[in-house]
Image (cartoon, rainbow, N blue to C red; front, side):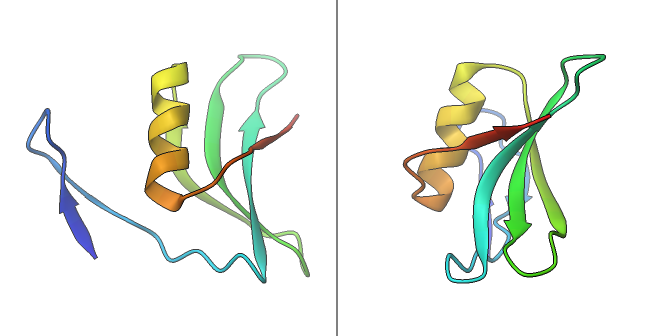
Length: 75
């Protein structure tokens, strides 16, 4: 499913998310501090990267897009 961003007019895809098999997580680098939001598979641990998190606004956008209340942070 493709959506158009309201601000930039750019297109982005919303990745499928199965809450039975995956949970939302932010992966944060200890060295650089870079944060990436995505989903970790509950069974095999595979991480699916969805978007770069540069601010609290980006984190909130991710939560709204996927209807997620909380995000666990992994280092």
